[in-house]
Image 1 (cartoon, helix red, strand yellow):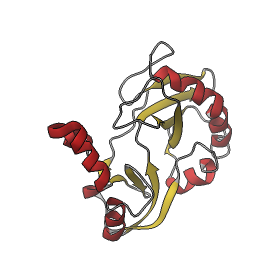
Image 2 (cartoon, rainbow, N blue to C red):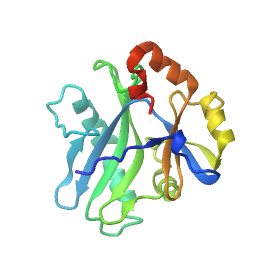
Image 3 (cartoon, one colour):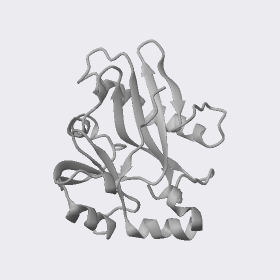
Image 4 (tube, one colour):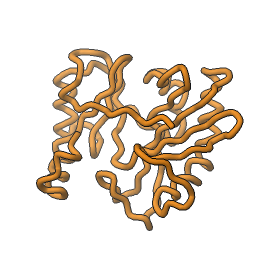
Amino acid sequence: MLQYPKILGSKASPVNKPCLAFVKYDGSNLRWEWSPKKGWNKFGTRHQLFDASHSLYSQAIPIFLDQMADEIVYRTKQIAKNPERITAFTEFLGKSSFAGSHSEEETKELKLFDVFLFKKGFVPPEQFVEVYGSMPQAAEVIYRGMLDADFIKDVREGKYDVVEGVIAKGTDFTVKIKTYEYLEQLKKHFHNRWTDYAE
């Protein structure tokens, strides 16, 4: 099952390229695989598969299947007539989720932030917004414009309504930019290990 590629930090940002910036939700990356014969049949975190027996991530299965699974297939078929395989990527989070930690008792939600089509690749950012952006679960776009030093500075300094930061995507790059406030929270929570969660 396809794993989501590592997203580089803002230091790897290209200079002065157009981008779409999406809210970076503070949760856990979950992946979902569909095929014509088996439907949605594989579920995974970033690094491992899970099923209904998992005490935490099993909570995401009915959310995904009930709220967005059929709609993703329907919308995908508008741009790929007979898709061989679809992999949807979502962020799993609750109100108190932080740096991949969750309260099992808390109500969770999923945010769709990427879709990969077998033999075709990831749906480009503008097309992702066009096809999936009107879904209530789609990641919110907060900026359209140049990825430059001013935008990175504004995100870091909290001038946008985000907690963790943003994911900026262009035609040939994806980078993440985190706010200074979120980095300070990491320092307070993880102490000497905070840099493990900073990028």
